[in-house]
Image 1 (spheres, one colour):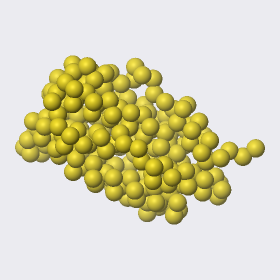
Image 2 (spheres, rainbow, N blue to C red; image 1 turned 45 degrees about the vertical axis):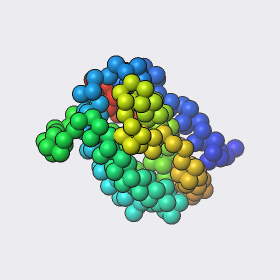
Image 3 (tube, rainbow, N blue to C red; image 1 turned 30 degrees about the vertical axis):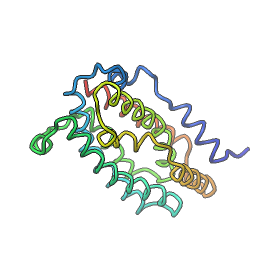
Image 4 (cartoon, rainbow, N blue to C red; image 1 turned 120 degrees about the horizontal axis):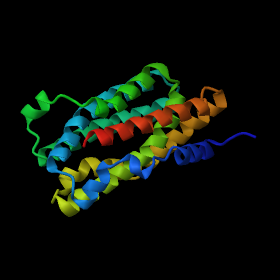
Length: 215
């Protein structure tokens, strides 16, 4: 019995859903209990994550078959837009250009983009599509909750919340491209569900490390 792309995406996302306790940071923002310094640290760490992920997605697009390449190209374009939104969030957190330039990133926060870079160099692109799509489901939910908390408790404007709104918003085109890429991978045998599941599990673990490292 063959597995459809839609079913594989659904089951992988469900199986890799993180434990709610794996992210101690987001509930603090929701309740207005996260210190502003920790919000600033989130902005500073994302200033390292976003450009690293964009380059990884560009590299994956170059290595991939046409279906997966379309997915990664959309991701890379999205990271460019997110970088512009991140500037407004960092400014609202009081992050200056000098602080951005001199910030020493936390190893626990940079483990995630380092692993995405490893995947860009070593993994089959179709496997990465499946792993990332499962991970993005959790990330988008976190961003929606952060945006709500920033507005309710910290007085942040729509402009300063746009970074999180962007990732929290539905992305029907990306969903369609992910499905097409997974379907092509299954049809050609270039996708290994077990390997993609392992990659996705590591992505979730590294993301949990990111949130706990923020303090």
